[in-house]
Image 1 (cartoon, each protein chain N blue to C red):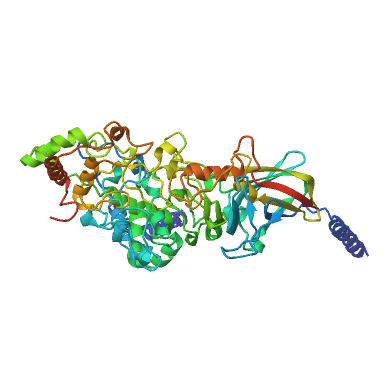
Image 2: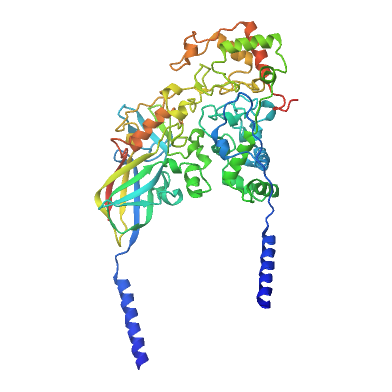
Length: 340
Length: 288
């Protein structure tokens, strides 16, 4: 009896010991509160399968800024997606490694959690499948995901962050994509003068801004609609055509003639900071864009009906252009762009 | 003595087994070689740059001369059909083991050996030109060898095919003034079934009947497949006239063109999937 008792105690002690020994260090990695700003559309459903977490976002931000993603370690995501330009840049077309020129203007990375389509032609429907493309594209980073993993896999800072974000130190392709996207989901811009005037009613427009807002609602808001200032549709609005033979607009993706040279209606949030404008930076300033609309756009079989029905133009007086620009500048978010 | 008998008996039994094995020269499986012969009509294509004098020149139905400097395409999803109709899939979900890039500049790539095909008689072969949607992701981690062969970025992958690999890559020249010709195909399909989807599928499933059954036994047969690139412009589905430029109907130089133009090439090369399931492919002969 004594022996059995002793044995039991021994077992209990051992098992207690072993549980203590195997207790892993568990980091608490809370989900980040994801608040939908008033009036914003519902987020892309993919966010629900990749909810931003504290360390996922921290990791994603570090990866976003890591130049080892490019073949010669010269370019990171952040090289083209610059915070002070609403995560776009000031080049006409994107510039990758060795000064290689891309096909299109760098799109701003803001409020992507609420987008249904990504890239100017909407080639992607969820953000998680996006990060691989700049990595492998010849004119951008010209690398490959295994090359990237090879470069960062022994980095102690990454090992720790992958463990904190995903539970162990394994650096996988999937985790890289997901954490970058978690970071991008947190890039929400909704704190502008416009928001404070219209939504919070804590400020008021100047006279020019108010006039601009009125004109905007009459002449622009049918496409630049809602709180994202885009209806997320694809339209050919007769902008000067990119003569690069790779360009066909959304028709490149869909194969539909009616999508030829159509591009996603851009959000106008932070538009003040995302010059030049157009799919390949055709316009240096907002004034140039408005002048072009006023003078008349290029004809096309699939030109947007709004232009077709109005002699291919949006008539604007010089005063109206000035007011519109004043209004558009109320869409600048100085906190988001770090310009405070 | 008793022991000796036992030894003898066991020796005899062993010998019987061994001889059984060696007598059995019907293997359970053997290799099947697919040989690809890339032609303009009946002439095997010789590649060449714009100044090459020996490059094979073809003339399309529309009267346009053309020649190639580069010619690559992806074969995957290979299935052999037995005489009784049984389908033997060959690593159809493993691009590293079951897919290949045929490259006219690399003679070794023109013979693709299927390993360990079950013995039997085969009457038909099916394969894909390109990569089926479920595998058409640039998953370098899962299929590093195929990625290196077909997806590595020195082929300058296109974002729109982000969905995946380049299926066909043809570079060359057309018309007497040797304008640049650059025809690539790839899929742009995005979206989950049941939800919103978009894009075009350039994958083509090919079915070819064998003129004589291929017999897999102690000999490994070879199936010679002709890929007649005359069909590129003069196909069963489309008669194509090349034109350079950036208009919606221009189709010669753009890598991607609009997907509309690209699909015409895909139809001609790999069939339209309805009344044409062979495209440019046919089986010249089977060597048993």
